[in-house]
Image 1 (cartoon, rainbow, N blue to C red):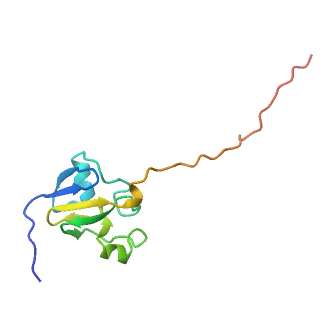
Image 2 (cartoon, rainbow, N blue to C red; image 1 turned 90 degrees about the horizontal axis):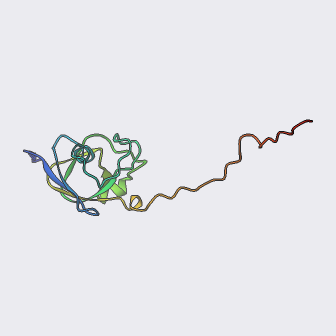
Image 3 (cartoon, rainbow, N blue to C red; image 1 turned 30 degrees about the vertical axis):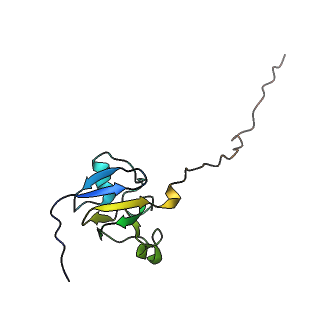
Length: 126
């Protein structure tokens, strides 16, 4: 097994936005983006619990910083390059795509909420 030595920051490019930033070898792809105030990868809990930062590595290599929840990335998806940006660090330059389901705008269904108390009418007694 050959070890890969990482000497310095790696370039990370978010394909959809064209945003590029440098990410240190010991920090997650997501934290590197946040540290530099960049945008492109959706941010949630930053801890692997929510799955909001799901990406597909298109080019380059990453190493795991911790386990990836199977609730958010299946074994099949992982085999196709999907991971959570908060749980991996670059070992070389990386190009990634934000997972497709996150490209769609959120739509909030508006529910009609009944008032807590029916409106009261006051009658004036004479």
